[in-house]
Image (cartoon, rainbow, N blue to C red; front, side, top):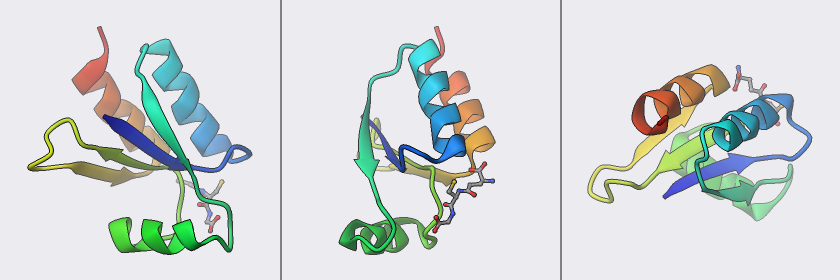
Length: 82
Ligand SMILES: N[C@@H](CCC(=O)N[C@@H](CS)C(=O)NCC(=O)O)C(=O)O
């Protein structure tokens, strides 16, 4: 499953969401508003407060995590685009 740590108003997150819609990829949106406890979880997972942040648990033994919208879209295209 693809999880996207994101904020609705973030243009980089919107770019990733639109790309996933175009690629017909289902995903879970993890909203991480500034100041929320979930932000701390994001930092624990990835090391930074930055969004978008992707977690792909398709292979649960080796989850893929990634910042940077362009890198995320390239990864998703390579792995999931049909
Ligand atoms: N180069 C990054 C930029 C991402 C970015 O600047 N995200 C902003 C939100 S739009 C952010 O996370 N800022 C830090 C914060 O909100 O704490 C990308 O393309 O993903």
